[in-house]
Amino acid sequence: MKQFIISLLAILFLEGCMSQPSTTSPKSCINTAQLNSYSYEYLSRVAKLLREDKKNLESFEGFINVLKGTVDSYSQMIKSSVYISNVVRYLPIPYAGEVSNTTKLISKTVLNLGGAAGALNRYKKSSDIFLENFDKLSPTNAKASEISKVAIYADTKLLVDAYDLQMALREISSSTAMMAATTQSISDTLDATSGYLNQAKNWAGLSQPAGDDNTKVLQNHNSMNTRVGQLNQKITSLGNSAENYRLNIEKARIYSELALQLEN
Image 1 (spheres, one colour):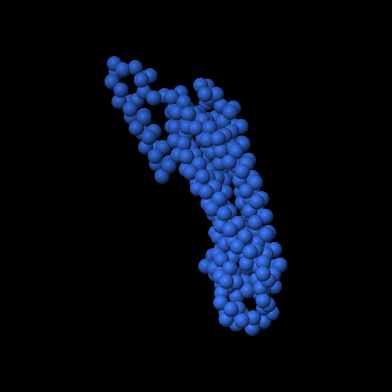
Image 2 (tube, rainbow, N blue to C red):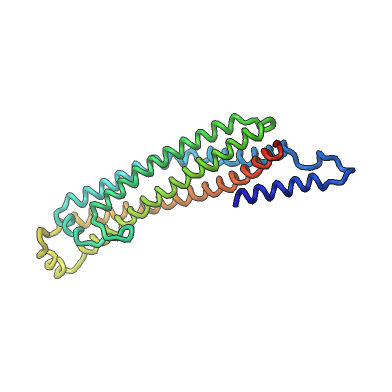
């Protein structure tokens, strides 16, 4: 589709040049310099947005570390109480369309956190490379081939890394939300009627809950819900940024490709 748009615009521009009346100067038609100027302008918008988002990117790294601590705290809560660790064995925890136990859910989240950290590093690196290459361009004298190279990199690398990071964060959001749901189920069990607890005590290895178990569960539940909310806000913010990048990068590529065609 993009190639079709480029070809169509090229035809329209070229036909516009060819259809000029003889009394009109050919220079009134759009030329390579103008196309380069348009492409540079859209790339400059991407560069500006990236620079504005740098602090946000730095906060992502800190947030991932905080979330790791939250997951560790959750894991310790499960291990610290014999009652809780046995209760969770009987809780159905849906994940990716399957029923998984808590250990697998924790492992999946830890794996997702590692994947997000890697995706964040790739995105930061591609952002730096884009800005470095863009800053080398001259606003008035850059060649179409130079601008096109930067536009192609933005389209095929920068955008891809931004979307990869977004997907990695969504994976974390999904598994973390499952942890929050699990703590709610545990809390419901601890708040159940005494008759239910007496019945639960008949389960193999299940002991009476300690007095501070519910407090620990409540703290973890609140922490998980807070982190999920913060994470979803970051995903939305990143998605909005990526969409702005995409729109400007697409326009930059179209104009740079047209400029290359006119040069040839």
